[in-house]
Length: 380
Image 1 (cartoon, rainbow, N blue to C red):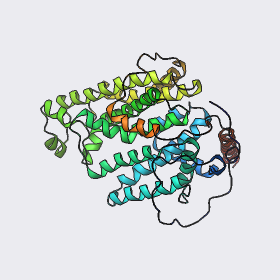
Image 2: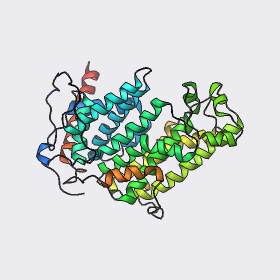
Image 3: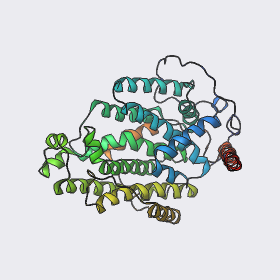
Image 4: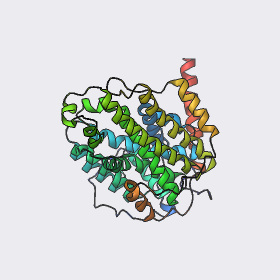
């Protein structure tokens, strides 16, 4: 990682956000737009980052735990990306108006990539991060495409089709995380995408019952029919049965193979980033292992990784910093090729930002503020 970039990112801006009404979006920015010149990089407001951190801590305990092992310089922009992805996911999960939500998200991204975000914490922070790290608009477009498939109620016949979906809603996040760490080489990016896809497959295996009760079925329908289960009849009256356990286990096996490939990619990351990515890999894989230990029953129960087990995995994540890179150069999943192409078409940032002083200073200030607030509550 190279030089530290000076102002406007070396000092976080502390002014409160302006209360300005959002205007309608204008024409879209092309997907391959180059990052803004360094003198034009938008600031990251302390209040905006704090809002993203609060969302992460509340809505994703597993990802939050893993993020604590990332260096401060990566944790901040990663928190921002998560904040926007969570906002997007929540927007399309709201009953009614879901197609409109996708349209509105596209317009918000237009403004983000134009450098004039809406006066919302997640948007302002995202505009700062995409400009700083040259996050391709193409990756964001693919993420929204995956969310639009949820809105359409798309079903997936094969594992390949399911991986197309997982690559969009989670592989994109893996690719963006790699970019935040300054790693843009194709083999390492492919393994980062593998990790995102694997994590999504673990989530699908965990949430079979929960999804079914909302009228959703993500398991490959071809696999269900091969197991003697009629997908539509099962979705109308979801129940656990041994045949279903076999389908869930097939999905977990596919995820575990991708986790093994992703482990090879860890060797391409900066050393201080490896514990956090190891943690994400191990914690999400453990969700699947919990499902397997329950006999594949994710209809009647939701797998949860216990606190002591999380602690043990976090320790393991901090120790396994030099994994084998034997699978690093394996061919990418076909589903992730559009993600790799989106990155290849985008000009890298002119400077590496993974050790930017502004982030260290920003987190130091936030943590001092939190300690002061805690001491104040105790005194009261």
